[in-house]
Image (tube, rainbow, N blue to C red):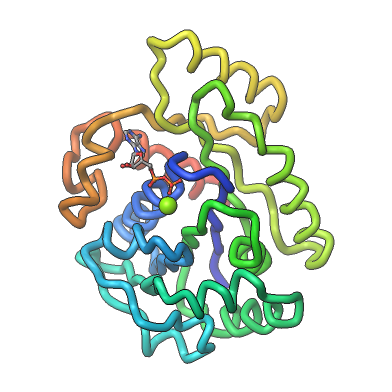
Length: 248
Ligand code: ADP
Ligand code: MG
């Protein structure tokens, strides 16, 4: 089976959805059979690829995924759309261990045939995110280069550790990604130094610059490498894909 990358951080607005979409599109362009799973009730990954949310989430229903998986403008990239249904969100967010396990196993059994699965998770550390983590082989944490960047990271890492304990030998730290990077700001450089000092090797070499093209791309239903192929944002996300592929 392929690699399952959960993009997680309980803070909103740090670049989770943006990273999930652009990595998924980048892997597909590299010839990898890729699935993007939208687990955020806000369904931004779904609309960012020009699709509509579904009434009920396929994972909650535990229906065969292929019945709900949609094609995207990218050859090799499929999307399991998100659902805004409160029932679904509740069912997953409050899911107990056995429910989460059932979903995890269901997902594992359905992912044959994909090289990469990206899971876009909601801005919380609740059941939804924990289920996503338990189903994943790697967790990727985007953090924004701002003053409170490190705050909450310990909490997040504790949740990851507890998932690792429950499912030994499966989930790994994929890496911390610095997003909305502006090298001209002293604050960005300080956060960069502090995060690398503290977390060392776990931090990706690639940083994602603050770039308006990255923010505009979803409103055109595109990944940034298609919306603005020469932009700094596009180049950074391609570099990040290569860095992740090199870990294989
Ligand atoms: P999250 O999923 O963590 O809530 P998003 O990916 O939705 O975060 O990003 C939050 C906002 O910041 C969005 O409006 C997005 O377009 C914008 N954004 C994300 N990454 C960048 C970037 N590198 N440069 C500029 N804007 C960005
Ligand atoms: Mg999001």
